[in-house]
Image 1 (cartoon, helix red, strand yellow):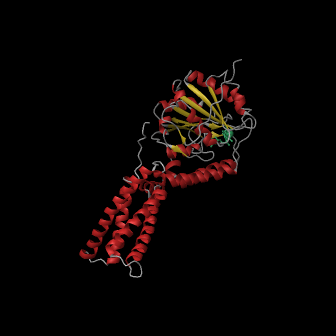
Image 2 (tube, protein in one colour):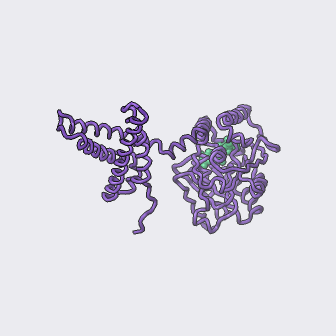
Image 3 (cartoon, helix red, strand yellow):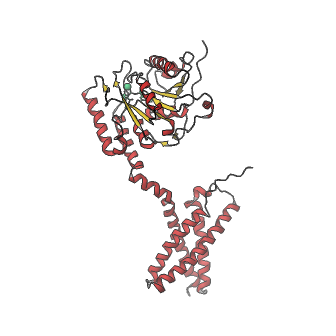
Length: 414
Ligand code: GDD
Ligand code: MN
């Protein structure tokens, strides 16, 4: 009996399916990768692997893989599955330790997959495997996503309790209210049985929560064509459902999070982040400290109670100290994430020179704007000064973020 294949190591880091299979799988890339998430399915695992492999050996000989993603089940489902690998060479097993959850298990499985088509099916035989063939036909016919649905022609649930039916439908209505654009695209958004083209989600960072991986995929993927096939959700024969009230709380949290990141609010947040609003606010606060330094020094240098120096000389020195103050704060705080990539005194001094130059030009602009507003447009000089400072702050920020703290992608080849 040859040794069971070694366990696959689960990906960590962002939940992002690669555009093409990870290198060592690229050579043996298959057409279809089916992920089976398991938790305490020790009593079902032999049956599910046998049935699925027989079905797919026929439909896609040597052109599919089965990836069991087990969350370190106490009943050692992963070990039972691993022992089957010599008999089923298309079977690969991931034992996750530390990370848990149905949705994340599915994505980690897809990240390890080599198929152009990715699928998910429960590991407890409640999803009828033969429906896979219809789904494959649909995807190969051009659909980006095919969902096995209980709510279309040929669909249904076996004897679900009234409570479970109400809960499931209630969950669907709630989802429709919060995320109509996503949930409304399928008749069974709660389904955990579907398949899709890798290209439909490749490169997209998913942030799944709880049990409902499908709404995450529809919400964040590029699904032009969605097809559905009816299936009857069967009674569980062995083991028990892991759905608790916790999954419902996760579900609500997931819906709200998707709403925030996909809807209008999400678009505003994304554009603001493109605009770097947070960074601009920090830049403005630093500017305020500069105004304080400038004013205080101007007073100490020019005022008769201080050194009583000439106004222009005092202003130039005060302004220069304010510029250095602003540079130090901006370099550490506002643009700290960028300057920490560009270490060394030489680079820092270069940034200071650029910042100084931009601020001196900004000072010139400030004076010109102040005069135009005050002399030509008859704006009160203090208001004119504030308007000029605001306009020049935006200009300073924009130029400095592109000049002094530019993200240099180029890495020197040493
Ligand atoms: N890896 C992993 N980690 N697998 C899990 C986890 C987990 O935390 N929780 C559950 N699973 C596996 C189970 O072992 C089973 O194979 C599958 O996910 C479904 O879990 P069940 O606990 O049986 O869910 P259910 O039958 O009540 O609900 C199912 O059907 C619904 C309708 O399709 C799930 O698939 C739901 O996601 C789905 O919405
Ligand atoms: Mn189940």
